[in-house]
Image: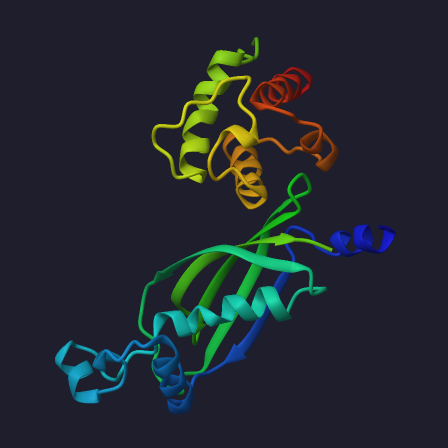
Length: 139
Length: 87
């Protein structure tokens, strides 16, 4: 129990995590197959241009995969379980864009052992999407 | 200036939309006697969402001990009143 308590203490409001990442054509293809989303806006340059975009759009939920990485991989331990998320997509991301994910723990509820992070994905400092991710902590 | 402390009725009115939103039930009626087992969907995960939503909406924090001792909505209301009264 002492170990569990010390684990929870490793979390604090204001804690930040961030990393650089990018998506390749192979990532896009894999996500298309996994999700079953074959909309050409994500794969066909001509179709994307017809909709007013310079290139096919990275799947929004592929961007959201970084929330899974945050909760499952980037926290002080492996005891956090994702319980909810919101994401607002502000501007599109494209294949091979140099992207940046940043998150900050904004709420730590001792009563519920619950965590809420605010998250943002940026390209060259410009926000592409923002959102929140909730998790519970169970040691 | 005298600080206004809510009574039980006011707090139940404030909690009801939180419970309805978290439990996705627009017709849910809660009373001081309401327990988790009386309400469809009020499981352990929903309980976490409820506690966090109540903390945010009311602008107060509970401890794990305070929450674990609650047996019904009435206990929750009493806890809220106690925190409002004690600051």
